[in-house]
Image 1 (cartoon, rainbow, N blue to C red):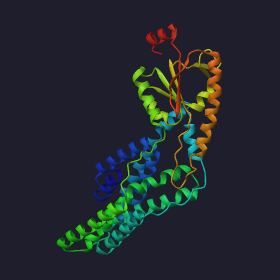
Image 2: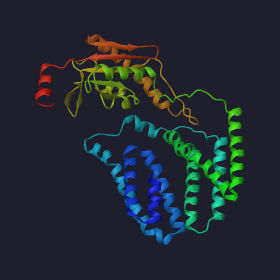
Image 3: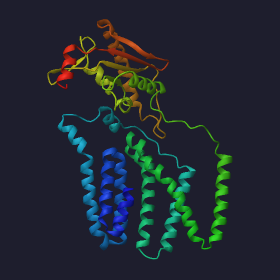
Length: 379
């Protein structure tokens, strides 16, 4: 939608489109940084297309778009600045994945990639020769550049930079845009054929061939969800959220648990928990800047994988090895931590266990003083 509103503003100079585009860009920047970068790439290509073919009329609108983009970028980093002001740092696991480097193979160009590229090339050539003016060629040029750049990013970013995060995310934009190549290619074919009846006949023939090919060569298979954790982990989260009051429990697990726990409970990274909390303390607590901070949550649920679930990224099969190696070390340290805790305390039980995971529950009842402060002082 942001690209559409920016295009509409460039074509009409109506500032209502500019404000709408600014809101779209700001929200996307707040929600997802990588998608925001994809958005900026498209905006740059759209501006380039307009400046190349209609420089004089596009100059002032482009300046306004640039200012709106800078403002949206600043808006998107406000949460980061707020975190720094509060003394927080970036999520350690995210930074680790961001800096992870490894050998990445070039992706294989599939048949669908080839058809999509052929489609956008045909659309570009037809628009070039059948366009009546330069303005008519702005949108085709933008779409051609957008698909070519997204395909180039998909093919080269991971292998050339050796960054696992770029390998895992660079194909997202191409995956979204590649079907557009099919539609644009078909549009190019229909523009070549002037007779409407001939278009209808050709459409029936082509789609019959495509459907027949799909039926006889692409065997239907059950959908396989892309899972980052076991079903039983999610099931136990649902059970915990139903059995315990909101904000009265905390999940100690790996990165995936963050999105599960937020909203009703709390989440803590397993590595941080092992590092900050001693199993030998009478009450779980950590020291921050010389001060003791008690873990006041009544119920702590520690998730441990008995058999680690590992996923592979196509073209970068070893991209997550650094994360899985860290988890293996943390699970070994957790075994030692749990054993020490059992010796000193009697308030830990096994909340759930199956062939893949174990969930340990530590119950720390709130003291009368804590309940009084919570009730009367809002702590």
